[in-house]
Image 1 (cartoon, rainbow, N blue to C red):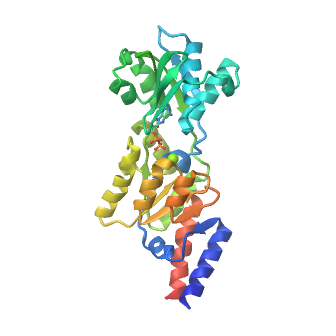
Image 2: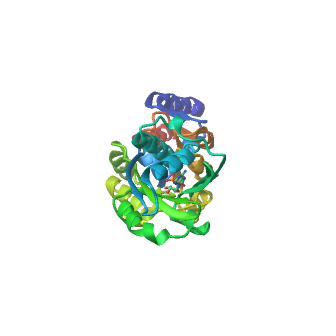
Image 3: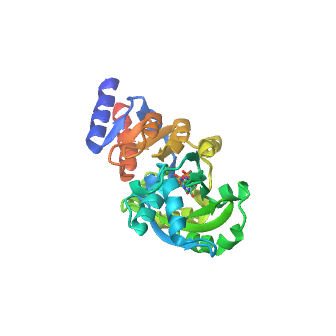
Length: 299
Ligand code: ADP
Ligand code: MG
C-alpha cells in the first residue's frame, strides 16, 4: 500500500507544478522546520535593471558605461546582464555592439575583471576592488551608501587601477513572495534569507516579504552558503533550502530538502530534490503540505 500512496502524492505534485526526484523525498519534506531562501532569483525576480550611474570626476560617463558594459556582457550573472543591457541602452547601442574583452575573469560572489580596449577593468563589490589595490575608492563611498540605502546593488568600477564610478542595479521582489513566506510560516517553518548581496539590500528584501533582520544572512560567499545550512542543522533544525543559481547548488545538496526553482540553472535543478517548475515560491508551501498529507494517509 505504501508505494501506491507515495505515487499518488508525486502525481498530485506534478499537477501543482512540483517535480519530485523520488518518493523517498517526501519523508524529509514532512520533517522540515526551517526554510532557507536564496534572495536573487528566488525571492526576487532576478531580472535586474540598471537604475543609476555615477561617474567619478576623472571619468567620462560614456566611457565608464562602455567599458563596464563590455566586460559585464561576458558574464551571465543577473547583475552583469543588467549592467550590460543598461549600459548599451544608455549608449544607444545593441549590447552586441560593445567591444569584446581580450581577457575576462569571473570572480564568484564578487564581480568581474578583464581587459577591454587595452584598459584594465574591474566591476563588482567594493571588496573586489579594494583587494586589487584600486585607489580612490573613498570617492565612491557616498554614492555606494546612497545606492545601498535605496536597496540597490552597487557595482563599483575601476579603470586601470583607479576608482572610476558606480552603477546601481535594482531587482524587484516577486509579487508572490510575501504570500509564500506567510504560507510557510503557517506551516510552522522559520524562514531565513541567504544572499551574497550586501546587508542593506538583503534587509530591504527581507522586510518586504516579512522576514526578520535576525534571520538574514548577507554577504555570504558562494562557497559558504552550504555552511550556513550546515550550522542551522547543527542547531538541530531540519532544513529546506530554495535556490536557483549555480551558487546555490552546494547548499541545495547539503540541505535535508533541496528545492530548485524551475526557472533557475541546471546545476541547481540537478542538486535539488524537488523542482518548483514555475519558479513560484508559494508552491514550496504546497509541496510541504502535500508531503505531510501524503504521509499522513500512509500512516
Ligand atoms: P546572490 O547570492 O544574491 O545570488 P552572488 O553570490 O552571485 O549573489 O553575488 C554576490 C554579490 O557579488 C552580488 O550581489 C554583487 O554585488 C556581486 N557580484 C557578483 N557577480 C557580479 C558581477 N558579474 N558584476 C558585478 N557584481 C557582481
Ligand atoms: Mg540566486
